[in-house]
Length: 170
Image 1 (cartoon, helix red, strand yellow):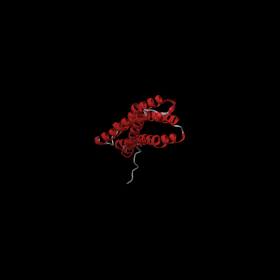
Image 2 (cartoon, rainbow, N blue to C red):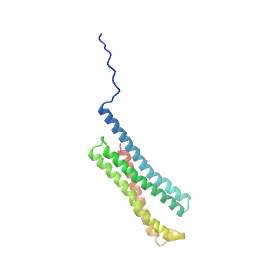
Image 3 (spheres, helix red, strand yellow):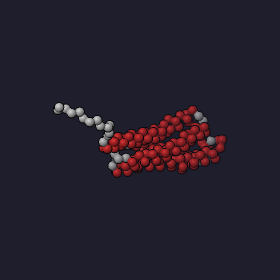
Image 4 (spheres, rainbow, N blue to C red):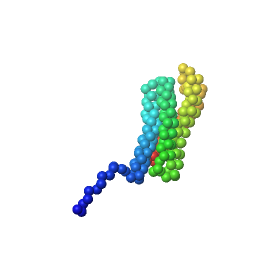
């Protein structure tokens, strides 16, 4: 007869299809991690920290925000490592795009670490030295305000880089 039944084949995907699916999964993972990182920076910087200072006294708010920033810094370290590994394994990114993504990841991590390892400890020392009168009554108020302003600028830079990372991670 004209129509011969085709022999049964195992459900196998071509190598190209499997590679494409793997690249798509890695791209989705990059996007998810980028969104998590950027979203956490936005949430702490623009929602949680201002809210803490709105409802708590400045000492309590400073302690709460300091703890959130510490956790954000550790999250930034973990996410930077994971994103770096995903970018390194990406088959869907050309070398120029990989370098760009590495640059954004390093920039975001640098912002977080400068605040966490540099500015936060200096601000905490000024707060501790100020005693019960508070930082605003301290002769170190100007230094504290300058450090706080620098940290706000770094978080702004980190949020902008985070938005760029989310848009370009895929």
